[in-house]
Length: 544
Image (tube, rainbow, N blue to C red; front, side, top):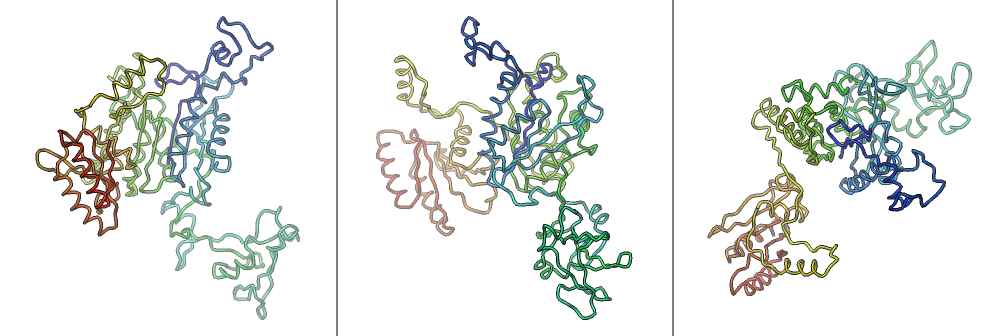
């Protein structure tokens, strides 16, 4: 699941997150080719309307590639939820229809987030926002249902039999636009005895019951006759005002044995209000100053997680802000015993000196994100004990540890520098952990310490063989092995031992080693021998 709360393009420059993606008319005209370098119009009779594109184009251009990438990151049954307000709601819907497909639209939730309303609004005091939901592929009905609480079950499902709690719902279709006139296959009789025994077959001394209304309108049932035959034990006949009515048992538990309910499209609970999110953040930081304004309520995101994330899901937020989603993930895990993990992505946006966050010592929004996550980890670890095993790993986007060929070279001098750089031997590894993380990530194992588990096999002379396996495979042997230290024959012996153990589990190992690990006059010979040995063993070799 992915959740994002992007900037709303309000034009409000005072907010600590950049929230103005409007392009000036002059800049837009130049970019669009409407004016030349001197500002003279090249296209005459161009209407100066808000709808012409310059007002929204920069915001949409910022969001489009992010959403496109988000779709690719989702698993096949994954969903994305996006918060937005009136400023870009209509444009965002069209953008998402294009990227995810109109057929994969799930919902547009209206969230009452500010019941007092915004008094500074020009005409009507706005008190709501929206949450769009889209899936990567078509989902089956009920996939966004959430679990009901026991109190709710006992309140609404007061009857009970061997199959569990249930309620009785009338089998006759209560919508009069449907009836015998357009649903003939749903118009048939039930036969009910004086004792209330029901059948779709004729019974002796039984009364025939049709889905007719009191005024004579010929209605229809909600079940076809074949379904009624198969599930006749779920039907109940009751006399109401001297006439038999047919009811069906609607059980609280679904086919999977879970007690779920369908989420409504309007959320008005007090726990969803923004002021609840603000109070929660302020309490966590132990002060009244607003280090981050208008954070989402934790309960809002918990409900979205219940809708779109399994108990072992990986959840992503690439507009992390104050880190509310990560907080919600840990809170829900503590509540239902889940093992959800979250990735929070936040640009190191600078905080202006006039803001409370700056006065409190924060210089970047990402510092607030990280500190909130750490405070929540500390809070839940104290409440649940050390066994809770919560941790946060911090990654920063940086240049690759490997030499990259630049494609934007324009001059001979740039080309010569590029060739010299590639020809230089790099004999030192400045940060082995960074290099290891990049190799593991590019090998498809995910981020080290997040998706990939790592342990070291110490060898002689300070050499190390890094063993990698995926999270969730703790009981299995690793399949990826990496060497960043000078090559020694002992490594081959170790790989041979590991390969024999892996053969018993029918696993195919991969061995990654740096080209610079082969040193001295016999380096080429060592590499050639290693290739032959690993080929015989059936170990895939990759040299970087």
